[in-house]
Image 1 (cartoon, one colour):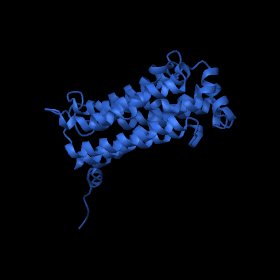
Image 2: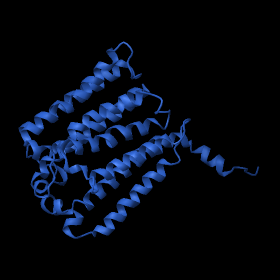
Image 3: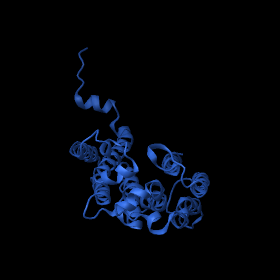
Image 4: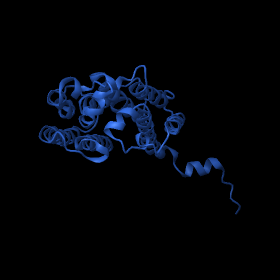
Length: 279
């Protein structure tokens, strides 16, 4: 019998809804790569001191090529977000656009908020901790009318307000020479560590406490939240001690080893949250 399959049938066979979650993950990764490339375009002088082997300060790549690469990746991220809709419309696209604007403000003059202590941390925490987490939620349900995704994203936001300082310890020499007044430069690394350490642990303690509230704003299984929060709090405590005891220990790409563990901790919390919501 002759097949009458259409393009629509072929798409339905792929179950496109199940592709949305990995698509959002890829989109967030592309946006992160775009913002990293953009930051390096405007950090050439800093990187000549701190990370001279990178493509731009070493001369292996031109600034114009890096800018085109960054703009291309921003475009890909936005194009990926555009078709994602929920019953309230293109909420994901709106959130990704907002996140992209914050990443531009972090790197590009005249704002270039990375020069200004806590403002730099906020400009990292808002898009990467809050907006992109809520954008992920928006693929399955409206978010502008629901407090739950914002509470969950708020935990990651709170984490990154302090934990994003982990990247600054290895860059103090070049940052100071180029007028970047991040927290370790403004306060000294010991005081900056003291001020930011609670943020590695507090969000996860709050995650453990939320199920105990009379009307908890998170609907995930309470036991899952308590276990995940406990794991992340323990991990965060270990990272705090690592920074305290080994402030000059370098990891990949010339960053402090705590920067790597900060990302691993955030991924642990993200993946764990997904698992307990599917429980």
